[in-house]
Length: 229
Image (cartoon, rainbow, N blue to C red; front, side, top):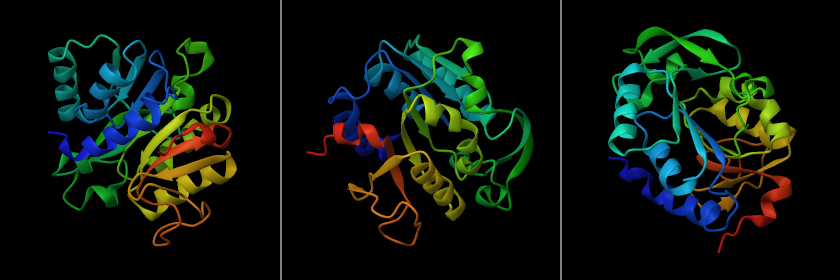
């Protein structure tokens, strides 16, 4: 029912919405939308005058996502039936027994996962200027280890648009990909798990001060605007 995310929603409402850091007419991307918990929250409460692009490559949760959008009469969402990675084309996607664990990462999905082929895009290509889609001001990314592919595929957006990002890391390799964003692209990370800024962006789990968990990534030039009180 999405109840595990209610505390995250509360924190995001305080950090982003109530503060005005994320305007109500913003464009956002929900990468790994699953059945739509974050898509619904973003579309109805965070950016009611904006637009949400929801990326979900797995057919079963994608159909539930579409149904949830219809039932809630939401008109500011586009569902994109594609994985997000580091190239444009098709990719091997692994359907786990628990759909929350399905991933581009075979090891994460588990030995019993079923392999299928899905379309894959890069966020840089999807939001290229020629498409006339406005680049997102906020990215949510929770793709079960797939950030190792999706983050390299959105470096132009991160460098030029400087969006805020909510990302959940699942593997040491994904920790490393997030660390590279923090270090190379001048972002800071605020960890929601323990409500602390990441003090060692070049370090990863199990370093308690390194990169791990659920994080809000903020451009360094905007970090002073994040109210933690």
